[in-house]
Length: 369
Image 1 (cartoon, rainbow, N blue to C red):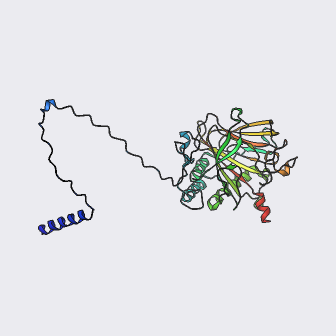
Image 2: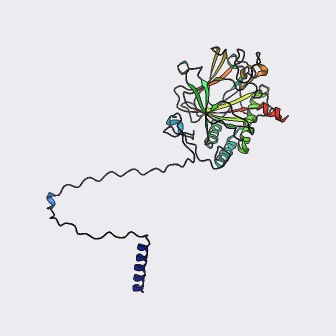
Image 3: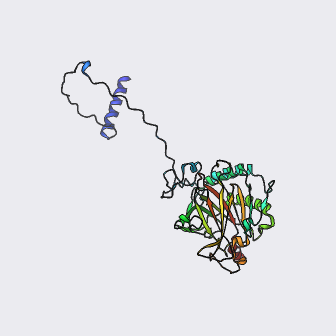
């Protein structure tokens, strides 16, 4: 039997060699003969090289890359859509038609609902007409630290962020010639277009069932806290548009109007840090910048420092809808009676700012009626 096995192995090797499956040995050759020197005359062996570090497997991002401004490394504890080298990192979107990994999103939402304190929260103090700005109302600590941590996971599930340009700075004089840039994802009614300038303008993403649940929870708390100051209800004035925003430290969202005749009355925002701040687990403080004046200069300037976890609403003159504008301005036309609003993140900060803005799409409801 062993002889037959040897013959079959040899036949298989010959067949594989003929078929190109096995490398054929090189022809033998005779090396020249040289005398071997004594051991005392041999050179000392070279030291062995240090072992190379084990390679780190690259994460499959599943999306194209493009140059974007670099974020500080400390702001990358969660997915902000960037890598250390300043390249866009879109992440893997596993479900067509959604900017998020929907499995990860549902997991984050379930965790958010576990830590959610409900619509009514204890000791929710509302400051009205802050800084003398009619229609600007603020509530500190609208979000708890646990709720903020859960919202970070919701943001981390989203992989496709668009880079928006919001015009030139009016807050920092030395940046007056620079555009304000931030990252955004807009969700809303089918066919609704987002505001702002973006490289590839495209309609808003559908809100979808998971984010619809998130929108329901957030707007319920805003209505419970701000009461009649926020003119939303469960009928045609129910919010149906949600915007996620991310801003780096020392970045500015230039003062601007949200379209005066496009959105319904009342715009609500909640903001927190993408990571913990030095003094606050919800993140670093930031500044709400309110401006009023003509196109050449702001005559009234109100800067309002706010802690992470704050919620605020703008209505009436603070929002600047055509209905409340004495000059009846529309779209983004300037006037001297209504306020523009902007954001300045901490100049020496290291944590990016994340926020959710909620609106009512007035034209959509008008079309349905």
